[in-house]
Image (cartoon, chains in turn green, brown):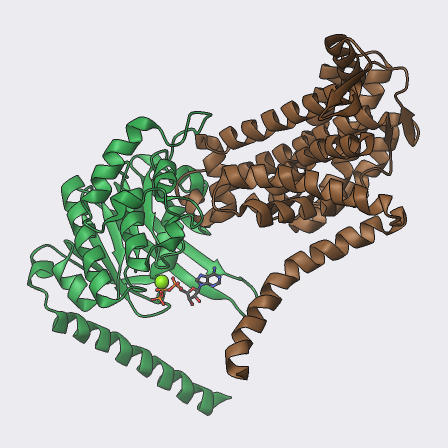
Length: 270
Length: 309
Ligand SMILES: Nc1ncnc2c1ncn2[C@@H]1O[C@H](COP(=O)(O)OP(=O)(O)OP(=O)(O)O)[C@@H](O)[C@H]1O
Ligand SMILES: [Mg+2]
């Protein structure tokens, strides 16, 4: 389904701000699998998702999605295959436009947009039903500007928008991180429902160990722009939050060791 | 009365310019100074064609298309060559100054003898009414003027309605979303760069349409006629927002048209009371400055007030 071969990305190459955000990532994601992406701050999780979505082109390597080599496809073209929910609730919706208009936009993801009426009558009925199923009372506010809603409501709607047309791949980048715990739980539950129901191939970034063990069928732990652990199958099922925390500790210890070693070398030789 | 009708007609014609500025400034959040060049471009193209005896409708359309091409150029400079949007507009506006002189072959093209939409309207009015004057609310009005006013009103209303409908289509909604949240609409598969180019083409098409009509109404095209017009458009948009608010697209469009007419009326009255025409641009600029700054300033005062008591 998604095949990532040796991708690398360096930001600001050749300057003092050079960051090697991805240093050779290889991954194959089977159709219908729900992959949790873990890793410390700055380990390259968002960069990986952005590389897949096409926010920038990778320096090296190839990306194949649903049988297409998308490595050179611009972001808006890849959007035909990809649904996305961002960390920031403001990123996924057009704030001054109504809920209905936002969905009208989503209902055309990856399709040519012509001079047909955006709020097509045959869109409104399923839209109202689907939004009513959220039980947030939003079905009566379809004409309200989406910017007037809470972050949790917006993330729930963004998720519905991203999956309105079934995407080949769903990318969720800490999409509940900016929400209060209750809304976060709601949105997570909704995400799981949608993913299970439509059997969506999903990459979900999170910092929550709880989510990592209870959701999905595979965990990828990233460190310094590489995939460090890949946990799947029975091992994933057995995994407890403590096991994950141990693995993080191990990474942290190694980083510290690296740092003290570097400091020692510095003192010795410079 | 003639003065009033003249002001109304010019206000309605310039409402098309204001609608163009509404698209660039409010929908795409890009104050686009290409406007100053494209209004003149629309006027020059239409004037030159009219002098050659081309059908006025075709000449007007050609002027509008010229403006759309200018707007698309600004969009291409901005999106494909990554030049700051303001600078892209400045470059195209500057280039258009020469282009306009070339189109006209000199700095001014009079349209005295040519058949224009205005002269057509005047004749139509006299033919319909059957006399040179008509009484409206007891006031004698040249039937030619009355007919042109009705035509201008119909034309501007139709253009406003067309814009409203366009921005409710799939493509139009995607263009609005481009100004609202480019990241979102890109993730939904719309080409943001193309949308911006299209949007600036649409904006400047309206502006040039306004120029083409203005030239026909005032009877000449002039290389200088575009100076400061973007600020004029901004003023109309801002007055419109004060009149109707920005709650919906339809209201904003209606407001912009009303804003343009009202602003033109105020200017006509001020000039009549002895305002020096040379001060007009200064006052327009000051007005826009005040409209941009005052709301924030008043907010500040309001917030400060409770602590003072
Ligand atoms: N557009 C960019 N320009 C420059 N540097 C960037 C850019 N995007 C990411 N980086 C850098 O790349 C590295 C990886 O960032 P990334 O956002 O992928 O981390 P992350 O794993 O998502 O972290 P977090 O958990 O904090 O979200 C960081 O050092 C970051 O500063
Ligand atoms: Mg991140």
